[in-house]
Amino acid sequence: MGRRSLLGGLALALALAAPAAGQDIEDRKAGVDARIAALQSDIEAQKQQEGVLTSQLSAVSAELRQAQAAVDEAQASVDQLETQLASEQARLQELTAELERRTKRLQRLQRELQRVVAILEARVRAIYMADEPDVLSFLVSASSFDDVVDGYEFLNRIGSQDQQIARQVEAAKRQAAEERRETQRTRTLQRATVEVVAARMRDAQAARDRLSADRDTLGAAHRLKESALADARHTREEYLAEVEALAAESAALAATIRAAQSGAGSTSPGSTGTGAPSAAGLIWPVNGVVVSGFGMRWGRMHEGIDIAASTGTPIRAAASGAVIWSGWRGGYGNCVVIDHGNGLATLYAHASALLVGVGQQVSQGQTVALVGSTGNSSGPHLHFEVRVNGVAVDPLLYL
Image (cartoon, rainbow, N blue to C red; front, side, top):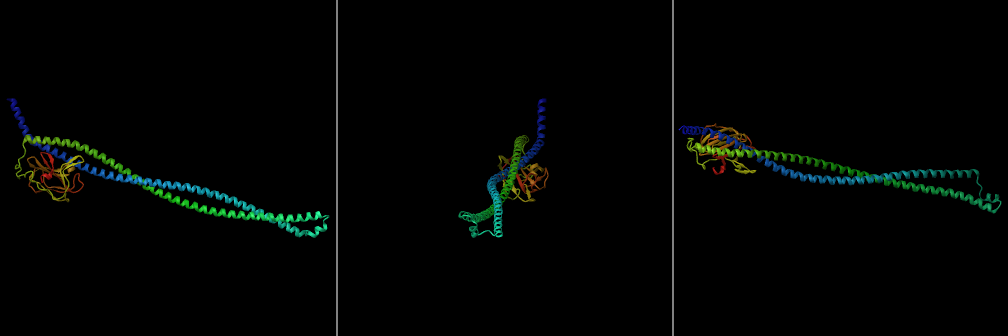
């Protein structure tokens, strides 16, 4: 008897505690689901960022390879011009040395010619001053015919030899002067060639430096994008790990909700006093385009639909019911959850303002919040969910 009384008391306590426990579980479920939605939004954003970064990284890599090829080509041109310049400069040095040698030779020949001319002038003056004997004098003074022949040939030989030496020296001087002028012209042309090659090399070096700077800029961009891509992937992995943990908790909470509803009994459609509509009787909470549907994204569930609308647009209750949550919910931002009975609930997230409170009865079409972009949101819109016994279902099947 005592055992039966104890069991009866325990059953009564569970029955009385079931609504409170169910409400606590609902709150935990809403929190977990809000966090999951926020993480899924973060994961989607990271996925898009990874795609963009991957495309940009591929493009930058291709540009970087082209830039490196251009730098290599420019460097090869510079190397070739440097080799050519070195050869031309060596040739210029050889011509300069040759010009110096020929200048010295010309100067030496000029001095030699001056010396020979001075000797000739001295001899002419000596002959004039001494009144050198003519042929008749040789004939009168000669003791024999042999003396006459020898003396005359001696005088002629001296004169012709001096003149020949002078002519040879003059010819050598003219030749040396011509060689020097030719060497000077050649060296002038060579100097111009060196200047042209040097100018081309400077231009090539400047082009190479510009290409190197562009390559370095691309390299820096490549490294930044690689780093950003690595960060995005790391962040996505962290989000995925948290989503997986929350998804498991969400499933457990959904089972707990169903068990609590089964034990305590579900609210009847008319228990709210407003006559909750059937599952197919929901109205659109806002008028707008669905920009993100219900379903898998990145291998994870997006447990509602996103409806585009401007900030401040009134959010209407999809059906009559009781407000079971009105406040901040992590990634959901400001959100309202309405229980419509028979295990059916709707959620309105990212609101800029909340116009109802927990426990308040609302009618279908009543404004419960205003559209915003609070929580994890990339812009003004309404994130709308439909849940049956705590499990998210496709809202489009109920609208």
